[in-house]
Image 1: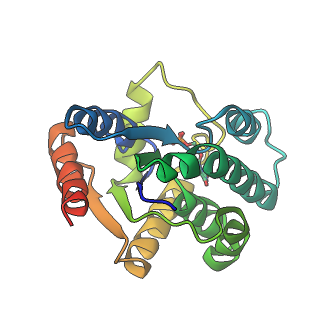
Image 2: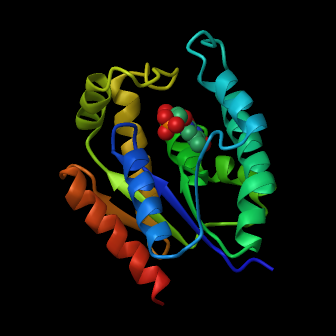
Length: 210
Ligand code: TMP
């Protein structure tokens, strides 16, 4: 029996989602909730190892389908080893990226097809979808500028893609937001950190108070 709450946070790099997840987790813990803040690809050792392979800037020969399958493999392991057990214990999971990332990046931006990429992910996730997805929407130019200012951050293989690719990622997310409007809530991530945080917190509180 799973009685926890699975929430995912999506958006481009530089949308502030990682910082805001940490703030949300700290706040919910203060209020007495048990929270697991985690990320994809990664979150546990095997998936972190897969992450290194996918994001290694040296791996320029990686085929788009291989990329999609590796993300799905990392997702499966993370779900089985970390997300499911935490949900069974009644915890709130705040996950930085999930299947919508694969649909936007591999399905739409890489052109593999949203439905095709969803179908390989179905095998990995067995219909375990989040209750709520916060999509942090921001123009790629703004996101990329924020990344460039953050000198300590890793530069991964996908960051090195051209602006056009990142624009397609955003277009993909907007298509998903329309298609799954009952699950995905759009947050305006072009605003300052506090405003974005307040929007995200309000949506989570709405879900918790249901
Ligand atoms: P991160 O920088 O948010 O940790 O994510 C790593 C990169 O992987 C980011 O550029 C988005 C990309 N990604 C995909 O392309 N597909 C996926 O399914 C996931 C989870 C991430």
